Amino acid sequence: MLNIIWPIFIIIAFIYAIFTGKVEEINNSIFESASNAVNLTITFFGTICLWNGIMQIAKNTTLINKLTKLLTPIMKYLFPEIEKNDEVHKEISMNMVANILGLGNAATPLGLKAMKTLQKSNLKKDTLSNSMAIFIIINTASIQLIPTTVIAIRSSLKSINPTSIIIPVWIATIVAAISAIITAKILMKKY
Image (cartoon, rainbow, N blue to C red; front, side, top):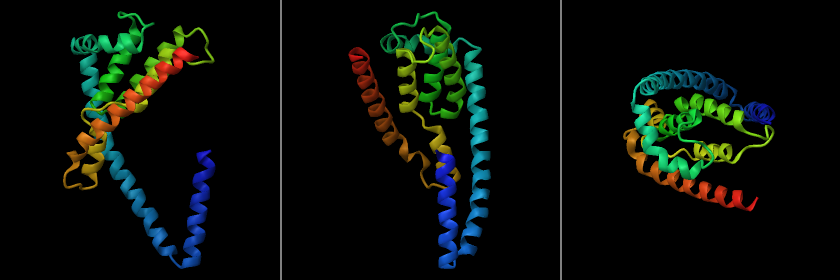
């Protein structure tokens, strides 16, 4: 669908630029946007490499086991059908820790791996299990203590105070996660 919508927007913008005599402005904005995209990608690349490295170190030490134990009460409530010593338990915990640290880009590969492991134990391969649905909800809401990706974007755009969004991010992600989990648990009981 997006491969249809975006070309339509681009065509409309070019037609509008031709009729209003702003073709040069649109041409300049194309090159400026490309330059900004490259700069933002370089900023993200450094941040992603740093945090992926930290997550790999945590995975190879006892730190991830301690964090997994810390998340165990929450995991029991959210994923009652997953055993504590199960590999998916560790994968989901690592994903949650990465999201809590605001490392959405680092959390993505961990989330995909956890979802693949959840699918292996899913009896109905064409339907999401309850654990898979809750896991998607948690990833979408993504409670963040340190929104590093947003802070990196704000820093790259020369924000005066890039960390000023921390408290609003806490409120928004906690409210989103709690309301989504409650809704999902109610619907799971109903259906």
